Amino acid sequence: MDNNRSQWGSRIGFILAAAGSAVGLGNIWKFPGRAYEGGGGSFLIIYVLIVIILGAPLMITELSVGRAGKSNIVSTFKNLGHKEFSWVGWVGVLGAFIITCYYSHVGGWVLRYVFAYALHAPEIYADSPAYFYDMLGAHADGTTSIPWVALAFAAAFIALNGIVIIKGVSGGIEKFNKFGMPALFIMLIILLIRTVTLPGSAEGLKYLLTFDWSKVTFSTILSALGQAFYSLSIGMAIMITYGSYLPKNENIAKNTALICAMDTLVAILAGFIIVPGVFATLGADQIGKGGGFAFVSLAQMFQSMPGGRFFGALFYLLLLFAALTSCISLIESIVAFLTEKMGLERKKSTIWLCVVLFAIGCLYTCTQAAIPMKGIWLDGTNGVTFPAFCDFMEYMTDRIMIPICALGCCIFVGWVWKPEQVVKEVEACGDKFRIAGIYKILIKFIAPVAILMILIMSFTSGITLS
Image (cartoon, rainbow, N blue to C red; front, side):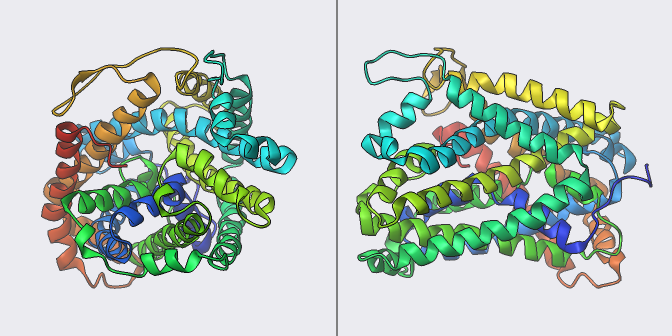
């Protein structure tokens, strides 16, 4: 166990970095649509309860395991005396690797839109679907081509991540998040003020503040469960890695509460920006979720909004910061593995890793339209299918690797290492873990069942819950 490893320079630096990891694109372009589908305020209540009951205990678990093991996610289990559970770490690292391959390219698309709004927004407004699909290599005349522009911006995006990672934990990641997360909240507040003051936005606000329980079904609960689970960066090797940089005097339970609160606040603020904004400009029936919604429908929303060019640029800049803070944490978890497990130097391993991530990620962007490369999948609803390779990459991580890694952590802590060890780790700062009894029940029984539900529903219904 290396006692000279990097550590966070300050408590606020760690909290902002961990919150930055949790705050990602899904908070902004998926949460609002799910809140709308799930009955507005009803979904918000369900989501917050799931974060408290499931998300927070899982984060406490991963941070505690990381701090106790003081190493990368693979070596941590060996350091804790259970090398037979190193498979959990391997699944986490591989999952983080694949996620970063495609997440870094989506970040490149966002970066492209930041520049596009600043330089030639009228081209987007002229035909927002055509602009988006043309960027991905699918043209209006039915032809396709290699999306060189999208690839170039993806390269720039991952280079930005690499620059931060090379500078280290406190000198790079922490410093960036100390600037990036406050900037993100400032942009959220500005956009919130703009959208809620639009004529017609009151109906959207009213919808989000109304509890329509008639729209709440089992699928709504699963949707909230999946959103909370993936939003908090659980099962991705991140929180164990970030926890390994924590000094013993840090209160893991209190820090987790702050991180979860910040992540949830971003999602809720995004809901109060997008739902009223779409109500006021495009109509409620245009509310959606995902990349197509963010790049096409929301571009149309800004077109219909006074000052839309400025606020559109600000929105995509907001997305860029969310993508950067998340992608940085993913890359750091892999770099920690390469430097500690493989003995590689940080700068060289970061550079080569970014090159490989970008190269494999090119398949994600190119198989959106230009290259007809397929994967293979099987689920209970659709049987054997051959999804586009870009979708196959997401299926592998969202439906298998992330939940299996999280489930492995739950089994390890709940039944092998024992919850008492987490309680001991939490109380190492000198403060009592007041909900220790509840935590033990949650991590041994409730959390594993919830994760199994995600796994089962993914393979029986063919639905990706992230």
